[in-house]
Length: 86
Image (cartoon, rainbow, N blue to C red; front, side, top):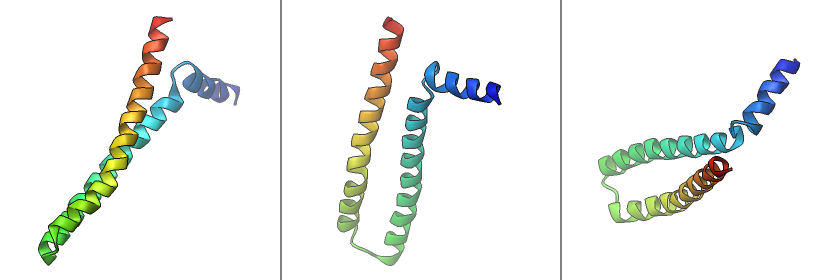
């Protein structure tokens, strides 16, 4: 049991596991929303919906997601640069 605790501690302390989990989660979220949006686009085209309103919905979803992706990547790369400078 102590080996597992030591491994988890090293993962989060030495190898920046928490930051990498956040980056992985944001990548997964982007992929999930992309797949779901493609299915929504195909459904809207087959039903003959107004695509201008649909583009507004995508802007509403992808605008904040893009900001979150930029923020997380900036935090990750800046903290990584600080560690290599030390």
